[in-house]
Length: 548
Image 1 (cartoon, rainbow, N blue to C red):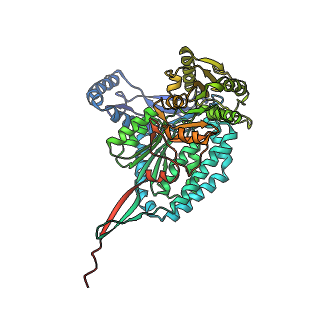
Image 2 (cartoon, rainbow, N blue to C red; image 1 turned 90 degrees about the vertical axis):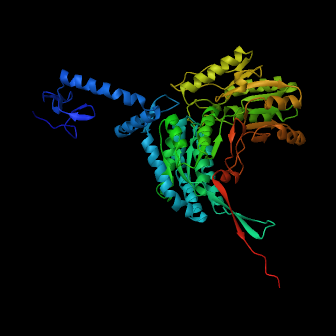
Image 3 (cartoon, one colour; image 1 turned 90 degrees about the horizontal axis):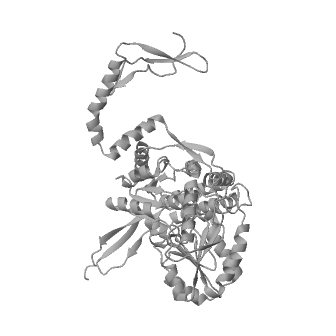
């Protein structure tokens, strides 16, 4: 025989967990189709070997079938880890592969959690001023690499480059800068009591935080979790959405280059349900910060609750945008369009429910129907594009199903209403549906696409009732020239984030979060740090002065 084997060790049969030669000791040469040369030799199995393999499999069946699904998953994940599996990342704009990333396993998740736990004592003991310097350096590195981050976000998510350059990456920078500043102000308080004692209240970090982020705003929502968690002294295991992880890798590089100690931030990519469940339930994870669907958030909260660990969830939304007859029409139209087409409607604070006072209903619908078809839709890499593709064909099909259901429920399509065939991407035009009854699924549920349902109202009380009629309570808007009315209405709306005469006016200093099924806790602002710290009270006895 000639040629060199490509195998690191001689190939053997595997029977009953043992590596064996064939029963007769014979081997077969494996020949390269490209060169005709021998590249390896393998055992030539016999019928006796086959019988032995079948007997071993039969004997192993009771023990293997009795294992829990979780145990079998753990074993198969370890096999995948040894094989070094990777996941293809697909462009929403073209349907073509743009990258591949490691497919993390449960063993990888355990290693990430162990690294974060080991790094916690040193990082949490670091003075807030030192953590602040590092976070400011992270912000500076993202700024220097802004174009790399913007391009990654555009290719991965299908976001127009116009917005990733102007909004997404700059917002991430602002998050790190804001919480870098707050890292220096993390102090406790002294409480006066009638006791002969002094009571101190300290704010302390929680430990290892699991940050689980969604597909629609990868860099912004990664920053909005990592920045406050790190500022407070926690360590992090970051699990980005399995289909849009590219900017998370760039962020991990920036964190390392900024001087974050090893183990403080750990990145793991892979299947959301399997890895997410394991990470959330892990006893060494002290808290969970999650953004995603209400259904998944509810499950995560139940798993975290069973383990008595805090969970912060920013979940679904179905924002109502109320337009009163006294509104500035031009300003209101701009706010309406921004509220439902930005990010191709794929954002939890999307204003997909338009409530219009009846005297101006037809006017508003007419203006919108004429305007939205002219909003630039196309390749996300084109700087003039405002509306890019949806993230996947699955999401496009869901949007189309909800549009068809709205029509079946009695709605009328004023514009749009059907998928677009363009460059192999997952495009859907901005769509307006009038006359949709309030019970329709398109009104009551989150659409996550560029679709606007329009309902008329006659009184202020009716508008408030309609706005509050869904299970969500994240965002809402009021368009009116009457400031007293605006204050009166916003007080009664059950939504955590509201805007008057605009939409999506956000800043890192302002808390963000919802009511009802839109989640628990708040991101941004000093309120966010309450999610990532716990209070410790220390009361010191101070005996009264002796009598003179």
